Image (cartoon, rainbow, N blue to C red; front, side):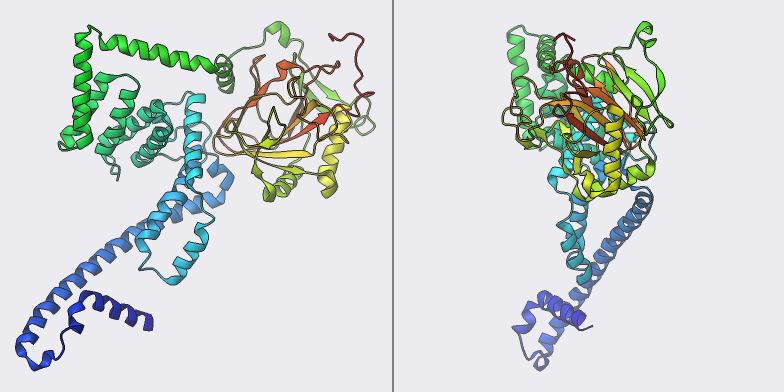
Length: 536
């Protein structure tokens, strides 16, 4: 109560600075009559203040009700909710941007408890980098899975549990992030989507003038001068005094006039731009194209003759005593390189134990620098990982023993079990697990030789996307919870098998958990001996 009185004193002191400068008002009716008018003005100001506060509280109430429903849905199935990439992006955006705006709105008028709690919690919120990363993930999913902006904006994705959509303001935000990256192709796509939703009548804080400003420049940067002029004219219809748009229009008209003088049509310019764009795309093709096609389930298919050589079987680990009476189910996924899948090889209870052990340790996944051998993060590996040792849990020890029994390889020289969780648009672009001839120091510190083989557990199903693909041979291996796949990275001679180059496709919908064991050369001399011929 005392704090309220203090607030009133401060507020009135702010509204009536002259009251302390003029004393003895009671000695003059004339002065007192002036105060009547002053008080009337104060009452009007106070009513305006109350109205503004009520409007503000109404906004906050609506926000709280909306978030209450959203968080209630999200907390019932966090992984399923965040499995939708739009939900993940909007969570980053809300916590990084919108909660900050709310804080600014209520900062002076909410209780100290809320503000102190907000201040403490903000240090744990996502930052600009997180929001930008989530936005880039949406753009990556759009490209990899050939999604048009309307499909992504409306949330019409396969296998979603919690449908979500992007507002015009969200689309505008995506376009701005693409613009800051000089990615004018995606800037155009998302600014057009924002404009489309506003034209359809969506009520939004996004401003058509700002959208058209970004959009016209992005279109111009891609060489479509006539479209840029059309968009700029539309902008000027909304804001005739827009300084930059007026300047741009004069410049566009000047460029058009020069082209006419030189007898150079805009069509030629567009064709040239398309050729240049196509040339740039070829910098990373054809592997990139094959990789993305395989992620979509397209691309090279195995011939019927080769498929006949693939079998399902019960496997006892080459007469391993543990599996003679209870062999495991095994099926061939691919012939060259030979990729086999083990079914029902890890239980749900073991998966949950591994995940619980890994969660507190998850850090941004790293790659080995091909020159220095040092571990570092990379834009093409988007996931978090943790490492688990056999001695810290009987479950991990049991898993390691299982891998040794079924592969016939010594796991004592293997790396620890790596657990990885892929976030929104999580991926690992095409790479080799083994060190090539030009990377002699890649695993020098381990002292166990090169990575001879890879064992990969799938610890979750993925609603859409998330395949493990091998672009060199056209193989796609899809996640199935409780299974594992295994392949050799090296030939018996010790030479690397370049056909094992593989990638983890972006997760479109869902949550992908995997764990893998990289087995090394040392200790395998008698378990997988060299053949008589170096070519085998």
